[in-house]
Amino acid sequence: MRTWKNFCFSLLLTGSLAGAVSAQVTQTADQTQPKAEATTGPVATVDQAIDRVIAREHDEVATIRRFTPVIETYIQDMKPDKEMGSVPVRDHYFLGQADLSKSIVDHSMLNSKKAKFDAINPLAHLTGMFGSSYVPEGFLQMVYLDSNGLDRQHYQFDYVRREFLGEVRCVVFDLTPLPKSGKGRFKGRIWAEDQNYTIVRFNGVYTPVAGINGFNLHFDSWRLNVQPGLWLPAYVFSQESDLKDFLGGHVRFKSQTRLWGYDLKNVGRQEEFSEMTVESPNAIQDQAAPQDRSPIEAQREWQHQAEVNVIERLQRIGLLAPPGDIDKVLETVVNNIEVTNNLDVEPDVHCRVLLTGTIEMFSIGHTIVLSRGLLDVLPDEASLATMLAQELADIIVTKPSTDQWGFNDTTTVTAVEAMSHFTFRDSPEQIHLASEKALELLKNSPYKDKLGSAGLFLKQLDADSKALPALINPRLGNRISLADQLTSSAPALDQAKIDQISALPMGARVKLDPWSDHVELIKAKPVPLLSAREKMPFEVTPFMPFLTRYQKPGSGVTADPAKADLAKKDLQQQQPQQQP
Image (cartoon, rainbow, N blue to C red; front, side, top):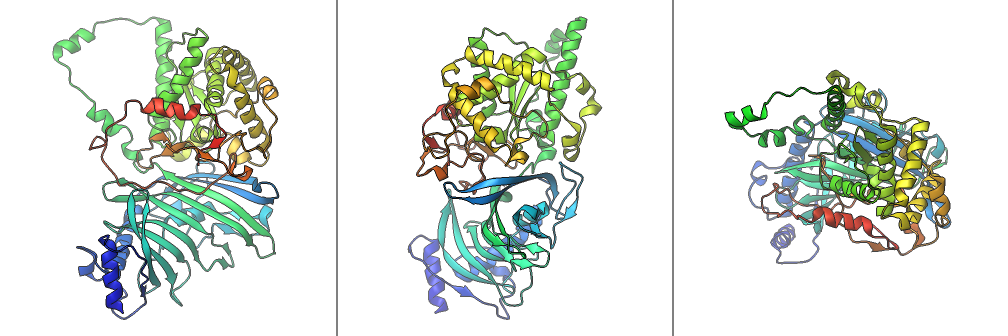
């Protein structure tokens, strides 16, 4: 029987048989570790595939522990709702830098807490949903299948099938901890890509589920191929729909954990060095003609250098995305506003993307910064224009000063120091003046007839502000201000109306490369909603990335010169549909 099962598996791997085969592998004296000869060469049997997966996972864990990425976890507590199914009632936000070699989040960016996650459950010391205490280090643990080691001695492997995750073909196994295999073992399903047999996804729970310190939570963990042969944790979705605590209370929540900033030590350096050119002596001499600067020019240069200092530091510590196509989309909208208002702002206004999932925006000199979280939930271009008009008005009217950042030491901070060191918040007076100017700009802009959707977005934001303060309250910049004139002219907020899209779910717009920190707009087709429950404004949803194998830029994929224009068209869609 074993020979027949192995033969079937071999045929499946070569594509000659499209059927489901189940092969159970249990512990024997000679099966506790992968055989050396089975970890290289072609894979033709179930046993060989399992050996390869085990060996590769050991290497993968050792590789993962080399990195110190930024880690962000956002959690929404949910409650049942007759109309919407479930709705958020409270939220929690954690941001830190993970030292994966020590399995810790070393000094959270939002506070000075440092804790080791070993033997710590994500949800501990429960006293009912509203008394629950989330342990962010527990969500970090979910990037590991089994931090104690994956082997046959502790697990039973059941082959399920082949399956594509995006364009990556995988072999799928169900894992079950063997009796007396110890605590903290994984129970669930794994997907391993079929070239090197790296586990790229695992979905399940650590056992036992309940313990004296709390609960282990169900999770779905994804790895991305960020460099040749290198797969790194990028996304973790966790959810409990009706977990009962020790006192009989109900725990219902959804969470997203994201990791990025894996290559922070090389941010900008490779590109800068490769773009350096050596001019001829004559050219250098011609460019070096002496010219003194006036006091006004010196002041402008000082402020510009201060702006550059801040932007460079935020990028190097993993809080700001490198320049990219999304910036061009934002700058196109800003230009539309400037042209129709006969504005000539000098120097030119640029836009950048803050990588955090919080909803906030701010200006640094002549650079407008919008957060990834804000871009994710904006329903259309008019709403985006409203956000940009607010910050453009801030630059024009209040002219936020950057003088304090002109000294280089003031911006030389680490990632864990940045959130408490930098602040770009305006005073209430500045926000009021900018809001008035922003309305004036919008009334003369190409978006003047579409501001009802922007007002609807502001209404939805206001309606959810009490339930989602961790998402809506800014960390570095300004909260989205509510303009009475926009909200009063907007239609009434109707959650049951399918064709009224006031805001999108989290993650609906922006895709983040965890290695390089580059961002781009998601190219997903709009999906017609089947019910009002699918609207989910500002809500956490599962991750379903389209997995691809790493391909070096310029090595066969032709860049699309109209990429920014196509991305802009995505934002222009104002149909009763929603990005998945």
